[in-house]
Image (tube, rainbow, N blue to C red; front, side, top):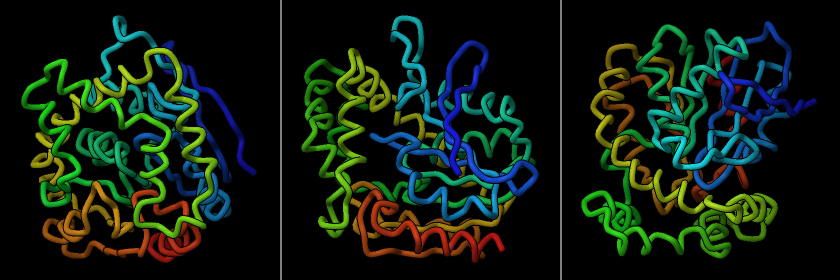
Length: 280
């Protein structure tokens, strides 16, 4: 059974899903763009009998607070700071980490800051290497290099319902993709100022790429048990990004799945089995 809760993180509301038994090994699930913890709806029940699971909505996403941009800096450093405090509020002192998309630079920041808290890492299309970035990032890269109004405006079509749906269906069996996920994402993106928040994060994503060497140094130094389960048809994060983890962690396990960016939409049972085999 999954419970739906809210945590007060120093005055900031974080919505989260919780399942499993306190006292079981802890598993923190971190979603990515443009989704929320809703993306884990199929995975959580498959793992709840083995783990104490917590899946928060990141700040600015889903049902967590999305304060005005004039009062809150939408950067990945800031998001990671709040999620770091969230883990303390909910009592996650040592945990395995599941990261996807934006969840990766968030979670990897936590690992660099608190390596002693990380029991293992599962990366599902959560990148930490330049070779993992596809040409699909070129419009965002242009905004990094020149944050002009024109380059910012050029990214706005990314938030249209058809574009959000495409992120789910590209490279995946379309008839196996539930419309619930991308419809919910589009609903949240329709809130006032939501697009501006996301454009700020697009601009700040360059800070994640700048931290790749620090993330890789963490991998080499601490060599956490590491599983990469990757939708190999992802238009944003390429399979070489998954294989690159083995460069710094030779014992990393890499599984490529014949699906797209949102691999859990089509392969939740396969991913759950891979996690259970990996964390046996």
